[in-house]
Length: 275
Image 1: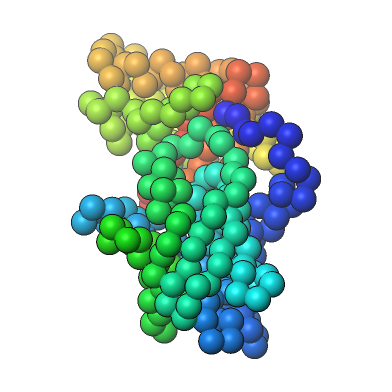
Image 2: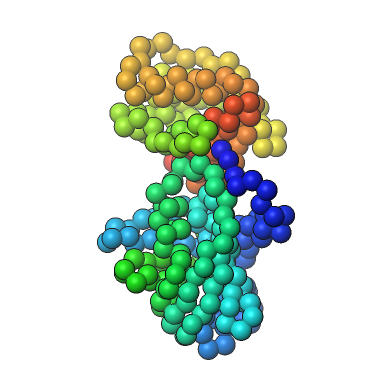
């Protein structure tokens, strides 16, 4: 994965803070409005509506608005994986103009959502308010839906069944093969083991977690012949688990495992907690 080179230290700090910002309004701990117009605080992105189709937002997608001079504001946020900044002018009580600023540029699993969010959050937008919600509407009728409710807490690494949903190599993120969708699953247990399916064969192995590093021991697997997409996915996962220490990161219900040596990665969605 890559990021834009040499982002200013101040921007990096702003992007980091925006990911953990709590709602803060004009008079207390909830998002609010500027006197007469605009809005402020930290908001979860619930969904986008693009050409009549609703796109549910990743758990990490957020937008924070901090007052600036006059009716200007600074927006920071997360498209779901990549962070961004923007300058905002509240033209009236119900209109705003967004000028995009800097952003990170990582290969992310939900690129269609990120691309749609980036295209929508720019230029003139109308602002519609209701209790705990903000709706931003573009001139073409497409919509960004925001909520003041905090996002669900991240899924735990252990005792969660993770289903592999995308593969990342270099700058490219792709879905798992269609005929292998939902077939690769694994669970890390508190007793230091990992088990599940590689897409075709079942497996188990030892697993050690130290900080944000995960090391998987040699795999013990069943020995069915695997062809097509399941076989391709199985070979990818076998190589990843056997490549040495993996960096792990959880955002909402999405887990990313990245090989520290090669940068190859997978993402997986939390399914059900294992009792």
